[in-house]
Length: 279
Image (tube, rainbow, N blue to C red; front, side):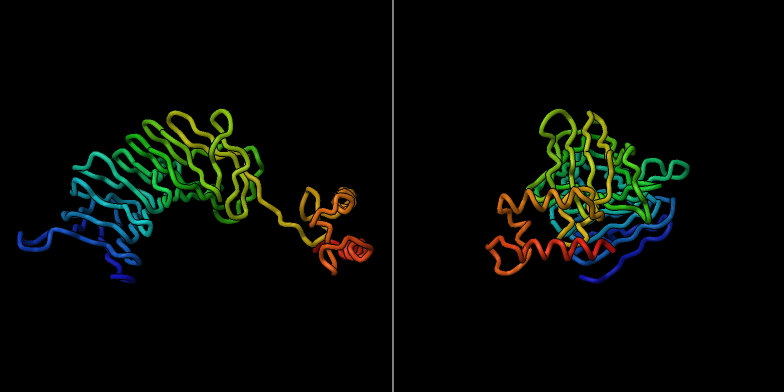
């Protein structure tokens, strides 16, 4: 039920005790299954996930031949292994959020041992990047779809020269991208200038990997006079940008009432904001 938590300890399993029990295990939206410990845990039911599965360094074995993760509310997160013993593929319409891959402890991050089909529009690949970064390892094909959401891990300040593998698979097919988060390459194998949250980055697709590179923090303009790059700094380039926009009657230079009229009040508003500077 929503809000409920089922936690499987080290090697603990959740199996049908007798044949007359219902065959289906349904995790409803808002419910959470937590797997702890290095000894594998198992679920011996037909499995429908609409909630959250969190693996904390262990292995979860699911015996269902056709497990369903087809709800947009389903979430799979953490580090360890999701082992589908009898399934030929996993179809996912929700979020996959692999945990941080530590080269000394868990270099593969989160491993899924079947082909992973993430082609639904509602699917989200959510990953952190930083001193450690999230990584998904798929032992089969990873069919890309939905969107990508990259977040900063901790106080990570990117230098711009990072090349971070966030997914490794036997074969990568497809690309991320929609109207809001376009990670579709216009040419070649790299989508440039993808933006999510406060980050801008490139997404590169290879036959076996997806990599994040050229990570930069998006700095918002500090006030209405901050019209030119770099944002967060007021200098002569902002003056030129304002004069250019004002001459073209661009809305970015329409800074004062009456809106729609370009006159000295807009110039005065710009000079006032420029004089106040950035915090």
